[in-house]
Image (cartoon, rainbow, N blue to C red; front, side):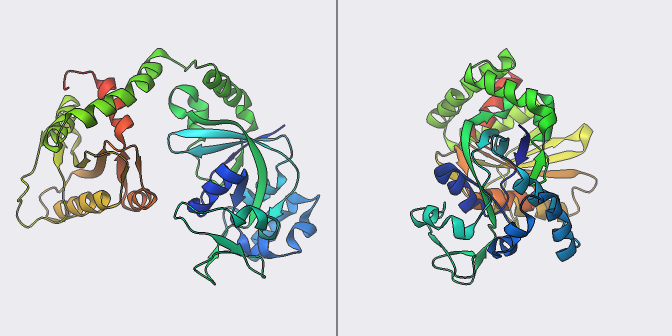
Length: 343
């Protein structure tokens, strides 16, 4: 039995429902998936996949990811990283599936955006209302969950935590089989790595709820300001009628010895935070950096929200703009970790 890490990076709005509801793990390379010859040509010699990709796409760096995806065998375990957690699945059979093999699975499936999809005569997947716009989902493997939603913090040791950060689509991580099996055992038996983590995980949800229920927006801004000052910053809340500003920031914190300025957009609400917060704080940060007043300083942008999650477009905008997203429970853990004096 081998162990793999597979990062979902292609059309997450479809890849996640396919995995969650249909237990289909997906990867890109739709051009090859649409070919009726590709799988047959490489069956029993999957090691030739990378050379085929290199021949067709000389600059394609992830060619070995596709090869490993097709090499996975029945019984192998697959670690799938998610936001702050990871799943562990087992490959259930040796079938390598293309779009034409999963038409039945797509019939009653919807994306995160509420859309449906079809398999075209050419063997590609398209959203029903966007003909000609191919979804780059080329191959699929059937899996079943061993354990889902294992928190990284408290259950993944240092070696596994570092490996979960790799950006490749698919890598073999059999050298970490003990770390993965131990994480599964700890999670199933509710035995996190240390007491501090257990306390933080147990209390974070309640702290988030208390902040959400007890504070108004102005008080939430003061709480963030207090936290940053506790970490050594000089912080202030800009005036709401600040002249000639672009975008918006609710707190500005300067760590003078580090020559570091953090601009924070604070969002006190439940549910989901959208990309507007990212846009506002990014524009504000860029306007301040461009003024010349902050020369010599490193400038960071944060969105701190009491919401449970960030929307997909928010995450995408944050990644593009290098904005840090801190949800309600993460901020609660930050507060607990630094002590409760600022509360």
